[in-house]
Amino acid sequence: MKVRNFSWPLFLSPFISRMGDSLYIFGLNWFVVKATGTTSLLGMVQAFGGIVLLLGDFFCGVLIDNYNRKRILVASEFISLAACFSFAFIVNPNNPAPWQLLTLTGVLDVGLAFSLPAAKAIVPEVIHSKALQRFNALSNTTINLADVVAPLIGGLLLTIKWINFREFLAINGISFTISFLLFVFMPYKMQESTRERLSIFDSLASGFKYVLKSPLLIENVALSGVANVMYAAARLVLPYDVNHFYGGKSALYSILLSALAIGGILGGLRLTFESGRGQREKNYRDLIIASGMLMITGIFKFYPVLLVFALVYGFSMASFNIRAFTVTQDLTDNQYLGRIFGIWFIAIDGLQPIGSFVFGWATDYLHNWSFLAIGICLAIGIVAVNHMIKGMKKA
Image (tube, rainbow, N blue to C red; front, side, top):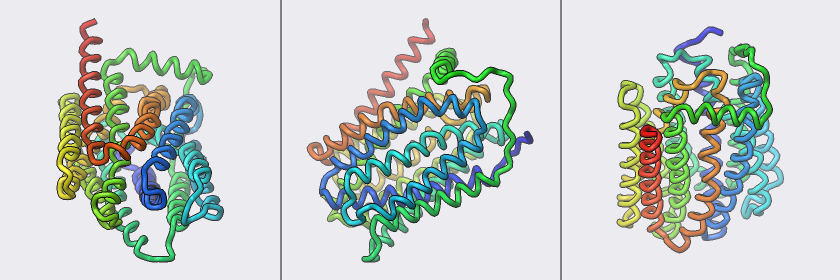
């Protein structure tokens, strides 16, 4: 198959899906916290979604490495669009029942569990290795652009009295439909493999053996797991802070999410010009900055501090994630990419239910101090991973 420096379907589809998904999450977070007054139900929903993602991660690697990756992407988008439109008809828009939110989250996360690793695994098949970081950075920039626009649109939609959670679901369904069509018509030919197809257990075992041979892969997976779980926990606290300390104004929540995304855009643009040298040191530096900003925000309860935090935190996390994905794509043989990204998301999704449940519950007691607790947890994780890798290199 001909490799290129760019692919419009792989570039546009994540942006469109993210636009709809960000609007849906915006609506979900706002309506649930507004209806209940706490983050407990939201934490439970996110924890359940994390469990579903974790279970999907165990199956996705073997399918992505053994079957047509484009078909997996198409099927994943179809499952998601069907779920959004179906629940738009049956959900109680003013006060969604817990079972409705849990079921909807479960189905959407089944699609997500397969689409994310498949998309990451298919990129090196389509994009030339020399253009990988630039393409990943540009793609991540457009995704963060969606995160900028979505809260602004979401805030505008909330000013229209007749719009409720049902409309947010329908918009998400439309975005998945467009993404589905882009993948359907994307040029792609599966690379033939002479290796026999492995069972799920054997596939996971071979993937773990492959990762364990490379300290850099271990470090990337471990740091990504810690950093992204803390990122999800921090986003969980944002609607709580706005509702309890800043008048419950949806516009202030929208601005925070936009600042988070603008930081991500700046981080992505930065990496389109950055050289590939010193990746490891740069990743640690960005995570240390993220940890420090979390702690500062937890200590100083002022909206301007929260706004600066969102901007810097988005910048640091985007820079880290783009580098980590590119390094993993460069270090991994094509036939193992599905399994490695499956293991990657196992590391992230295995901890997310615990993090969402713990901080969904703890925020009701810690309030703004939750940011400090998250920052401390991230710092401990960074130190622990660095110590582990140094020990492996000495062994």
